[in-house]
Length: 490
Image 1 (tube, rainbow, N blue to C red):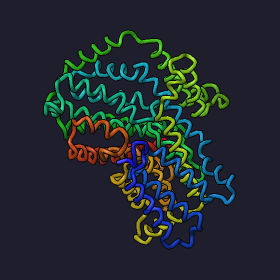
Image 2 (cartoon, rainbow, N blue to C red):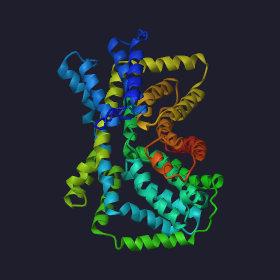
Image 3 (cartoon, rainbow, N blue to C red):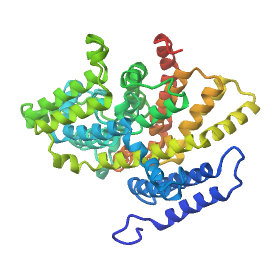
């Protein structure tokens, strides 16, 4: 329960997080870590514990974290420098890329273009249940490059379409017949989300954080651009999208196999939407412009002087939507998730950067590396173990961002130090940061939305999540490994 009706604070999780932070601070300090680094680690772990325990909304906790870092003088004894350090990450273009892209994605919902795309695919493929599954997955894939809120994409755009299709067949939890078609569609609706999130930097909010951690771990030798990420994830992502509806169809076979009515239902919905509107046309044009600029097509055609930064591209897209009236400034102010992401992203990136700057990540990485070396593991076994531990430890996290912030930097450093080929290893870690979303009903923001519709039981959800985690791991390891070899990445 909140402290009172005006507070977001949950006292018990908050006290637990504070106790964890203080305990870390009071533990014997390693010789390799100075006082500032150890205090920073205690504050960081306390903050992560508070996020996991949901002591407050993540944005509110981030404000508290910024205040702690600035007040404690952990980065500098000079108050002016300390607050500059605490706010340093808010100048990061990657943080603004995600925030602006979330604002742009609001146009997909406001104009109805997102729903139109979904119903269009169902009208094409909806004569069989398996076809509807593919329609939902392809809709996800189409929207993913410009919807960094995977919750908005899977839960806000695709899920209502999935519900309307299931209800058109009278398959509802209230009728105790979710097995007719609804359960299968709900699982496809969800499991398309982690796959598409892995395919583009702009497909889920934590991906730019992964890009930064990779750059930090490699001394900026690997700075993944939007194009490099998309190209690297293209083939394994497409294979995963192709196999996922089939795998779920095998393990959770729906009672209804033929669905001619679904295609008719989708065409009816498209008819109700009417002719494509001016706003949808502009939104579609912005969609194309973003993809062309993010993929560096002008640079390839006209030369290096025509390259546009990915964050600049996002600002261009949002400017077009504002100038044409597709979005208003009030729409932007109302896009709470974008502003929320800007705050918590900036705070967590700042804390992770300071841990690296103060030598804590180096100490932690050296400790893990030493333990692996004592076990006598080669880089192949060691890197596989690191990826598996990183992925399946998500059972203990309710936030992909908290998980990535807490573990990825150190795991990247260790794997690379042990001799893993740099590009394939960092790409597998990047993929794992999205694949891990499959596991639980609290793994990411999309999961409670779809799980909360009650089409899938808890046991079925966890079973499907574990199965799909194995399938996706195999695809990215085998198909991804061969693809990256063909691209010359190792």
